[in-house]
Image (cartoon, rainbow, N blue to C red):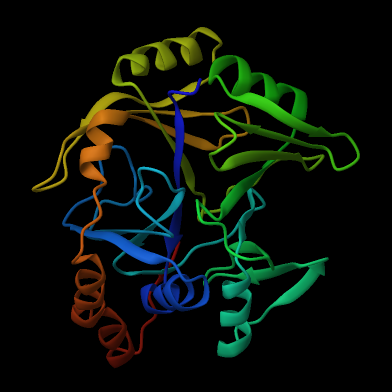
Length: 298
């Protein structure tokens, strides 16, 4: 399925300022675009919340050929409960390791030339201490599963991924749509998968005409379709069509029509300034402090 490509992983963030510092100053990523919304997303991109929220896309390069992070911030929600579903994102960048050391960001050596660092909210990132690749430094995203055989069948037979590597000792399977893309690693944790309230979503692009077929294939096997084919609008930008499904352990998976998404995801040179302005205009922390209250914990 070379026509399909890995796009991004969605993280819910409670502290937008600290999160921006981590991605920009520690990892060395760039703000690719920033968008503000007055009401919840029809496809629950921001989670099960109806109010004002923002979306910030960050990565090492344009979304056309880089796997990036989508940071969703719900105004008024200060923290989310982590589950055991997201097991880490691995990227290769000695510069990120140097940045973390210089900034005093907690860093743990967990292997040869391999460090573990946590983003605000507790999300784990693995940094390979080698020169940053000229193409996409993001290598893989690891998700927990309760039955590796069942999940491998779902991702390969229904969603079209290729199994690239199997490690019986580690109980992992590495999959992808192409060698040049960010891979998906599934790890059997030997028990149930807990998504907490911080649960994310992984997104892929495909030709628009494949979307109905993905939905039908998932339905035929009696798996969950969370959002049937729907159009999503972004003010002033392209309208995209998506189908959102869930794997056997409830991991949310979004497929979006490729052509329209390429138009939507064009790098916005003002993205960095828009994020900074939104953070400066966000007085919610001051309001809660003034009234001796805390933001909601989801």
